[in-house]
Image 1 (tube, one colour):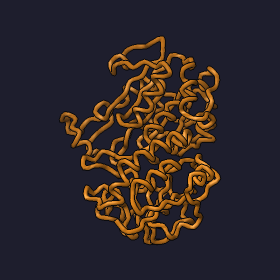
Image 2 (cartoon, rainbow, N blue to C red; image 1 turned 90 degrees about the vertical axis):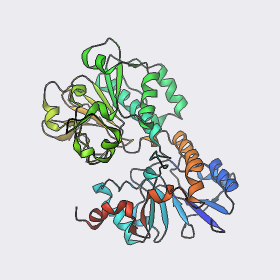
Image 3 (cartoon, helix red, strand yellow; image 1 turned 135 degrees about the horizontal axis):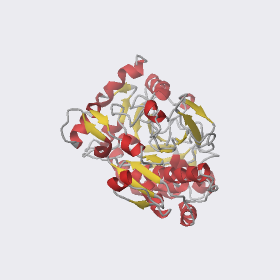
Image 4 (cartoon, rainbow, N blue to C red; image 1 turned 30 degrees about the horizontal axis):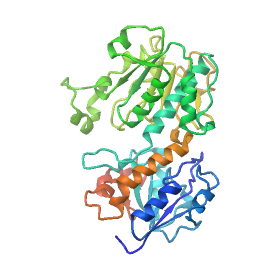
Length: 406
């Protein structure tokens, strides 16, 4: 570790704005006490959920110009005009899946000879992710699904999560919720799905088996959760194998349609590889037996496996309708035949204080020891997409994307 290492906490610059932060004031103090010779400064922000005075009141320095920092830590993608050449950035860059809307960002980082470490790819030696806001994405995503049910079926309106002080207040809303009988299907088995299940359970939604979900109707709200082997199968007819799925996702076909014929609400919490099969098509959505009328796409991959997710919605304007017949967006809740979509791509930003504290704890415990020491386990190396503006070997597949050739 160098004699002096300076970390700058960035103000979030993405539009729409995000109020989260990677380290809370108390966590900054912990970093400084735990790691010798580490200095942390904070870029002033009027939007951040932890106000500037909460940092300065405990002795943390505010600094607008971060050019003297060794590492710049943010949450969402850095706005291109604010990039400081030659610096190391750690954030959710959202470029490794060749996301078209972020091509200019990776090109700008490369042109400015930046090093980019992406939180999403910080993993242990077994490939398990070390840090994520996923739990909170699942919490807010499922809550927004309940909000959509209330509005679409004229039950009433639930307060948006971002108008509540914190998760404790949201829980009090869930304890008093009165849902009509609806069937919810959830995809995924990680932190995101765990957050969604937590909310549904608190709202009184009962879990049932896959068989009962597909074959029975209920007089109360129920849900079932699907892993990849429940919604995909191998093209060669052999039994589902996890390692084969991870290595060869393109050699699979979707088996999700039976659930689309049985479910009213789809809460998508899966991790999706861009080579994986789509869950269903627009043509499938046109059929009279396609029952899903609300999709809370927490994963929000664009373009991705859910054809109605044609854009990311926002915390301020969370819902829109998708008309399967025209393939176009329409105003939210404007037609009963449409599918109402929630596709906010920064869901944890609705509970920013809870999410920030959770994330910072993981960052301190699971990432900074590797970053500030010798990275002997390769944790930082595996998550480094660009090194001094050049793609690292692990991400060489992005070269054509970076060059604008695909």
